[in-house]
Image 1: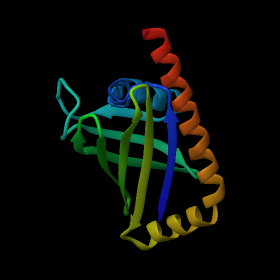
Image 2 (image 1 turned 90 degrees about the vertical axis):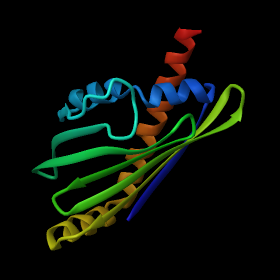
Image 3 (image 1 turned 180 degrees about the vertical axis):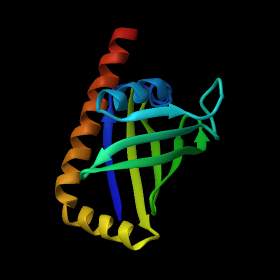
Image 4 (image 1 turned 135 degrees about the vertical axis):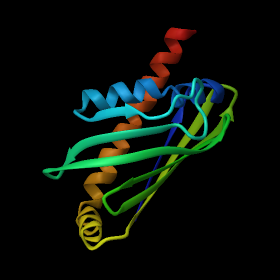
Length: 155
């Protein structure tokens, strides 16, 4: 099962990459939404090998996710792998410079199941695909607005 979204951001690609790799901002955002986030690595700079343990409640059950940064190509691409209770997810964030001051951010995630209960979870997600795509689009639009606001404050 796949989800994709893209946003064109009025910020240069280097600054978008810096904002996307400011993991502390995303950690705080997850904490505000009720998740528990723990950084598991000791890297001083963003890079391959960064790891997190994330726990949250989804569909009435506690979920534990192990997340790892598996690809890091400045300023073009980030890849992540996540695993939780029989569900594996690969995620990719690609940045494309549309001009000197405009960047396209493309997000892709693919989910696979390795257990029967995980397959049932993915099946229920497929039934809610429209709602989930709408929520993803709204989150991406909010991310775009936040990045443009942060960039305008920096300039």
